[in-house]
Image 1 (cartoon, helix red, strand yellow):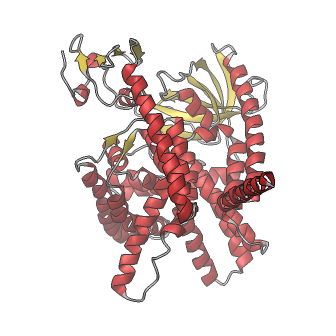
Image 2: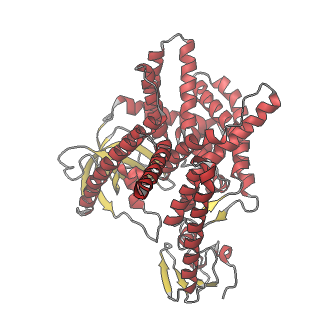
Image 3: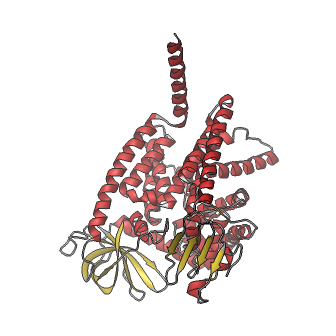
Length: 567
C-alpha cells in the first residue's frame, strides 16, 4: 500500500513537470527544433568538410573566373565580393565566394565576369583565447577565401539576374541620396538604419551607442519590417488593390529589401516572418509566432549553418523570443485609457517593459559577447525609442520622395537633420555619464543555466512552490560560486600567457599568490586586450611593467588598467 501511494506521488510530480514544460514549449516547437538540430548538424559537417578541403589547395598564382556580386570602398583599396561559376578555371572554386582586394583606381561593376590572376591569402583564425576569428567570420558570409590582385580582365558583363542587379542599383542610389543631403555623421547613421550599411559610422559614435546599451537600434529589425508592411498595406489599400495582390506585392518587396540590405541576419529573420504572415493572408491560414520564427530560423541556418555564430542573428532571435515570452506577463496591469496623461504614462511604461523584457534573455549573452553592461539602458531606451520611430518613418518617406521631387525632399531634409542630431546626441550624452560602461566577467556555463532557471521559475511557477525552488537555486548558486572563488584564491600555480596584440608584445602573468602582472600592452587595441583580460576573469591589474615607451608596447590606454601600482 505504501509503495502504491509513493508511486502515485511520483506520477503526480511527473505530470506537474510535464504541465510546466507544456507552458514553456509546444509540441510543434520541439519537433521543429529536433529537425532543425539534425539538419543543422549534418549541414555543418558537410560545409566544414568543404572548407577544410579548400584550405589544402595550392594558393600561389591561381586563376579564377568570377562574377562580381558586391563592392565596398576601403580607405586604400576596393573590396569586391565575387562568385566563381563552373568553368575551365574553377574546378576547385566552383560555386564558391571570395573577397577580391584590388587598387582603389580599378572600377568594376556588379555583374562583370572577370578573369583574375593572383595569390590566395592565408586567413587568420582565433589569435587569442576566446578572441575574434576572421576565418569563422568569413564562414558566416559564406566566403571561402581572400585574393589580392591587380591582374583583372573583364570577360563579359551583366552576368547576374535582373532582380539582384536592380536591387543593388536601388541600394546604391538610396545611399547616394542620403549622403548628398545629410551631413556625414547623420548620413552614416541613416544608411545603417535604412539599408543596413554601418561601414561609414565613426568609432566614437558606434562606441556611444554601445556604452548606452543601444547597439540594437543600429541594426535593422522587425520594427523596420513592420513599418514597411504597414506602409505598403496602407498605400495599396487606398489604391483599391485586393488583399491577395497587396500580400504578393509585399512578399516581392521584402525579398528585394533583403537583397538591398545584403541579407543581414536580423533582416532575413524579420522578412521571412513577414513573408509567412503575408502567405497566411493569401491562403487564409492563421499565423503563429512560434511556427514563423522556427521556419525562419530553419531557412536561415539551412542556407548557411555558420550564421549560428553571427552576433546579429543571435541577438535578433533571442530578443524577439524574450519579448514574446515576457512582455504580456509584465504588461498585465497596463490598461488602455482615454485620458491623455494616463495614456502617455502607459506608453512610457510600455517602452520600459519592452526594454526590460528584451533584456531578460539577452543579459548573459550580451555580457559574454561584449563583457559590458549599462545601468542606464532603461533611460536610454525611453529617450531614444520615440525618436527612433520618427526617424525610421521620415527616413522611408524621404527616400520615397527623393526619387520623385528634389524640392520637397530639401524641405524634409531640414527637419530630418534636426531629428538625426538629437538621435545621435542622446547616446553620446548617456555614454559620458558615470558608470555608463561597467566591465563584467563572463557567465560560466553553470551560472548561465542557473540564471535561465531562475528567470523561468519567477514567471512560470506558482507562488506556493516559488520560494522552495528559488531557495534551491540560490543555494546551488552560492555553493558553486563559493567553491569557485576558494579554488581560484587557493590555486598556487604560476600562469604565463602570451597575448597576440599585433605588431607589439604583451604578456600576462598570474602569480601563485593570484596577483596579475601585465608586461607591455601592444598598441592597446581595446578590441583585443580588454576582452582578453575579461575572458580570463581579470578586471584589475595589480602591476604593470613597461619594457620601453614605444607606442607599440605602451599604448594609449594602458593607464585605464592601473589599479594598485605600476613599476
